[in-house]
Length: 174
Image (cartoon, rainbow, N blue to C red; front, side, top):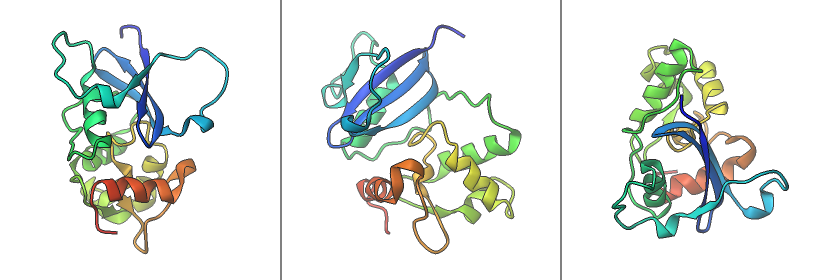
């Protein structure tokens, strides 16, 4: 591995998110949250404003994942399926869940049971839910598109309102 770098980005109306990259390999992603909630102190990476990224990148200095995030938060139908991801931390089942998540189309949802079935383990809905709860790559592995059988379900510390907002951005039927 090369030296990992941290990139902070501002998604207008959403807040500041963070990425950890090793070249083009996406290691970790934190969804944008309002600045008031970002931790204080410590060393921070410079902040990139996604609204400024939309133009063609002649020298390749802007990572592809940032271009995709800019398009996504700009309301464009976006797929993160071609990105290279660090999944070395995953078991074989978790890799199956990750691949199943990548296959859930923009603007559509599946239940935890359906996700488990797509991953080849139809009775492992709790394990699929546990993977979503620990997902290091939200949006890229779109766990916000996974809902409970009887409603939206939760969305970790960001809450169900954030999940609903992501799904509304995608035009998903709620």
